[in-house]
Length: 389
Ligand code: GLT
Ligand code: MN
Ligand code: MN
Image (cartoon, rainbow, N blue to C red; front, side, top):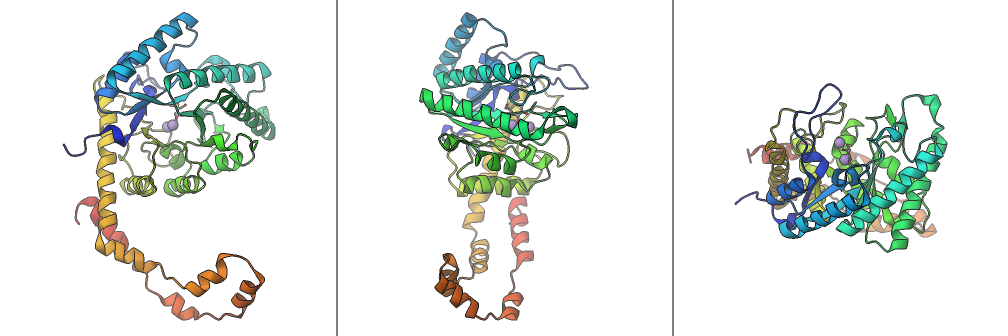
């Protein structure tokens, strides 16, 4: 059937997404707790290739070691039985009271050490279940009271923790990479490493011995909260070889983190995100980090994920049409005006090239008057997306 997910599409989601009970600042839960094993089963049955989880999503915080082992054994059985993989693991460093003022960037050395200890265990758990990506979302790494933290020390402390954990992964020989997830604010008034650009710059300062292990996990919603062009942000990470994971969803700009169904807001932006991933042969999971609506029933939490997969596949078909559309492709080819002599002159610096370039004259009015046809191009995209074409 059309738009049915297949395993090779590698669709995944987080256990926390379907398990979201609707609890928020203004309201109590509206859905009962969802057992993590039933959650994994449900995701497998709607066609997910894999799932992601926080340590505490799977093994309740404070559970005994034997209880933990029992749950891991059960999870492995469900994964084998249902044919679903664990693709990403992460550590909850934001929910418990001990993290009320941060984890890796807490002013309290005991809390920083506990956060690293909890992360080591989450990494071990991920390695056991087969996760190839370990996400670090520092939701509590921030502040409301500007005077409370030295922002320079906070970056240093963050770096120490990331380097420590990356060295651990390398030392253990785990086939796992770290993906840092930026967010500008919420739950903190301001969060450190606010955007993809911050994370990319931060990575370039890491110990070169482990730098290759660390990349970025952009989230569409977080990027839109920061008012960024998500396509451009993600493209830059991709071009740097640093896109290690990607949280897909939807968001009205400048609001709280809405985690809406993928494709439900800016359809054109969603289309260009799918195009970016598909055109560049993205081989990682197509991961949805989304939340059910508060009015959703217990069954509808799975419709949310099924709907995200369907919308992705609809947009992927539109990408194929865009790439096969003769008029669009002719326009795009014509936009590229090549000049071998000039390209050769500016490709690499040399004194000969500088001499030749300085001596060169340009016909500026001819260059400025060239027609680009952007009115037509944008209409073609609109018509294609709306089905008018
Ligand atoms: C939390 C957050 C997400 C992160 C998850 C991983 S947890 O739901 O809002 O953006 O990706 O820690
Ligand atoms: Mn996310
Ligand atoms: Mn989010």
